[in-house]
Amino acid sequence: MNTTQKAAAVVFEKVSKAFGSVVAVNEVSLTVEPGTLVTLLGPSGCGKTTTLRLIAGLEMPTAGKIFIAGRDVSLLPATDRDVSMVFQSYALFPHMTVLENVSYGLRVSGMKKKQAGEKAEAVLAQVNMPGYGARLPSELSGGQQQRVAVARALVLEPQVLLFDEPLSNLDAKLRRQVRQDIRELQQNLGLTTVYVTHDQAEALAVSDSIIVMRNAEIAQKGSPRDLYEKPEDIFVADFIGDANVVKAEIVRIDGEQAIVRVGVIEIPLPHRGLTPGEVDLAIRPESVQLSNGAAGDALAGEVLKATYLGGHIEYTVATPVGELFVIDPRVHMMFSPGGTVGVSFAERGVTLVHP
Image (cartoon, rainbow, N blue to C red):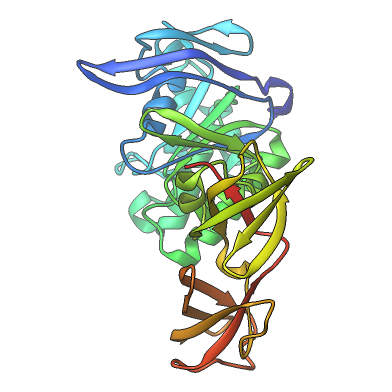
């Protein structure tokens, strides 16, 4: 199966979609580069699933244009687009065997049964399901059913593969395994893939780039590392992982850097277009550093809660700039509730954000 050569770019040019008076997607422009996996991430109702359905041809745009491999597909139905979709519910035919499910699209398109079966077997092997062709979906685990759904989409050799919350029906351990399988398969085949989820850990794990959506628009797009370490605003900071958002003050601007005062601490940070005065500062929980006692160059903190979680300890610490949520990997030592600690910040994971 030579999917790599078919990988295609997906481009939105000011695409909008309205359902009556409700605007689900508002003038969205985006580009999914060929052979990359881009995740649409956001809370329920933000427009991510509607955006996916617009790519699939299951919805038509109210305004704007959609291009796949340079071809304007804005008004083409799903059947005329070289796109396959893996649904949240798997949508397998319960009365058909695994092989019949995977080969169904090929048979409908007119391929002979023997050839369709051979292609289906080859793709089942790619998703680590060889020898399962004679089984019924009811005889498979949730993770196996998900793999069959992926195989059914892959066998059509689409230019673009779409995933709509594909792991939401799986338990936590299985989710980790299947997301690794999906990412490995996508990279091996060089498939252009658009993936929808509301789970930020899932998005960080599988994506080349992430598009965070809010209120039918794009809030920010970038690599997983950029979005986690350099969120543009409070919404993105809070949605991509946990973030402590505190009030701080830009004392002065020095070139690209701002000198930012947080309580008694002054730290240099990229100013990101902000000017002297009160600002919001996003601090990742793992970037909060605790020490014994309150030193002069640290904030004075009081431990309110301490929870041991095996691989790390979570704290809630009261400070002059507000309560901070802290993740500390030092499980060999534990600060007790009621104790006094010094609070400082790591160089990474601390950033100025727009309101």
